Amino acid sequence: MLESFARVAKKLDEQDISCTTLVKNKQQEIKAITRDYEMLLDSIEQEREVRGW
Image 1 (cartoon, one colour):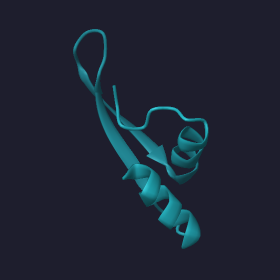
Image 2 (cartoon, rainbow, N blue to C red):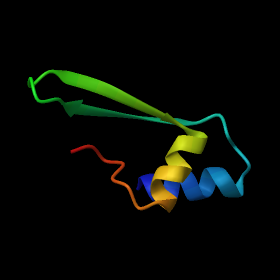
Image 3 (spheres, rainbow, N blue to C red):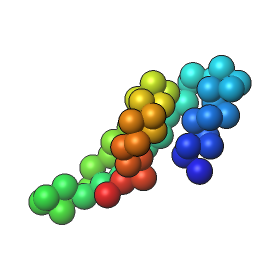
């Protein structure tokens, strides 16, 4: 879904988007990671996980 979201945003030249993922760190604390348009596209193109871990 996130890849489709990024693909449509790119096609529509809509760069005012972001993606926020909640993850747990080693101390079991929940942290938010926010990726802007460029970071989201870079993560997908480099085949990095964008859904959290």
